[in-house]
Length: 497
Image 1 (cartoon, rainbow, N blue to C red):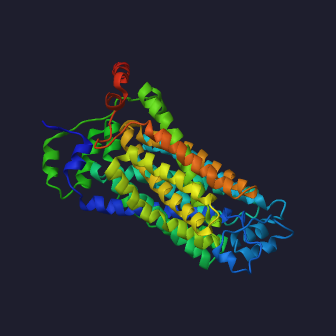
Image 2 (image 1 turned 135 degrees about the vertical axis):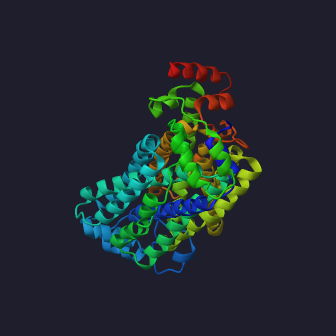
Image 3 (image 1 turned 60 degrees about the vertical axis):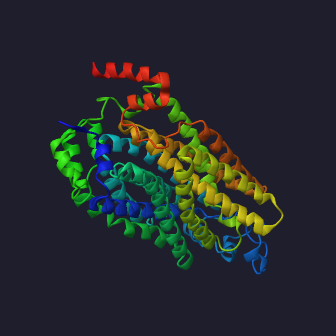
């Protein structure tokens, strides 16, 4: 009897009708995540740099100048920081306390760290479909419930839980789609994933500009989340790779039959045998991560890469005030830059490979930030947009790279953990923005240094160009660890015993 791995079956079956529907709905989920993320950005937009004279035509064309919070919150209305004004009035802030609103962003990213780390781990234990479904259900409930608290400190826990579920939905959705599609589509999927995220972000940014009511902006993503629930319950198949990683050969075979229905390979699948992938039965995913030196060192380097990259990416993505004019329109412009960034990410990945693409893109983002130091406003604005373009492309590629470098049996927890470390960079970017109160150049320069650090770390990671994702820790070590493969063999013997 011929033996097949799950990935071999997916690679040999073409692009089936089910896979097209699955890709469409997971991209839709990414768009919804973009909307949920914009809610956080919408709630924390701050007039760190605003026009001293809002009636001047320079307000729309030149880089804005800094002005501290003055006597009353009402003065902020003239700068179109509508969400700040509304929340300040709703929660009773004055100029000495309204900066607490920035805690919304920090709380959201703390929750996102929890979601990607622990809920990502649950996806390894209970399945991708389980976490994908329930994180979406909780997102709907939390979005509806978050508009009711009248106390700011009661409002924050909702944002914490909201960040956790949003992070889990985005991460699990990405892993879910890559595990049901052929290997050659990994780069395309990663780019589409980030582009869909940007579309949702941009769509809600324009909606907030036209209808800047913070409670309504919180509710809109919940409405868009609803169609995902019945599709996941009644139509979605569990990942066959997850079944195989749990030594559930029958579950993997049944899932594959539905995924590749209509493909000529179904006949060969019926006559062959699916090879189980699990080598660590009964062991926690974190034990798998630490079981070999090669995997653990790669995990540490990837975590550092995510910290630098996310700090640069999220910092530049929320730098709407550095372009001049309405922060909501600028936010939509920055979100739109993510769409051409996906074409750049795909081109760089195909031309240079994922490792080299991250290295070069983040290096370009770092050098682009230097243009902000010039005295010419058009060049300074252009440098921010160019840096955003390169950082977004680099951020997209590290998702694809992470899915290819980690073994199946611990892929979700590894990507979740490294993505969780990345939230440290995202939270740091929020604090770095505050340095703009001292000098507007400081935040952009810090994000440029993070881009440089990301480039250096990426250069020292293994290259996955032209390789299929490893299925076991042993395969990972043979491919990337050299002598560390002996450790995997010893570990395999212990687990077998």
